[in-house]
Image (cartoon, rainbow, N blue to C red):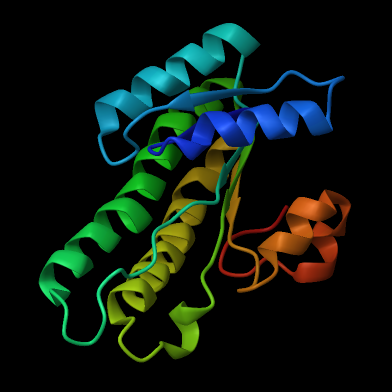
Length: 178
């Protein structure tokens, strides 16, 4: 398991996961997920170390910092950059390797706010909806390459992380079939 993230919590999360599962190989890589070249280099290193990339889980994102009187334009841009562009960059870079393997799974975590929206959180809701649309489009394009992309129903990601075998209980959300 490789955790890639833009923040300092990435390495700490990897250490905690390694302690929880000492029999597995876990590491954390800090990289700016909003810059494709950095993500591409990270995915290349992962493929080189592990021989391939079988599963990518895009399970990260930012929530709004600004309140109703804050700088909405700045907040909106930041949310799109990290919540949408990072998912696109990671999916795109992983798909390069998955295409060569002719197999792979990409899971894009959904946000609760995408369906109904939240007061003062319109950038967050819009970024979640954008990831949903991205998931559907990429699923259609990459299915022919043996790559399956889906988004579990909003709010179901925690249970999937806790019990990956429950994937069939949650439906496929916006993506294709597994």
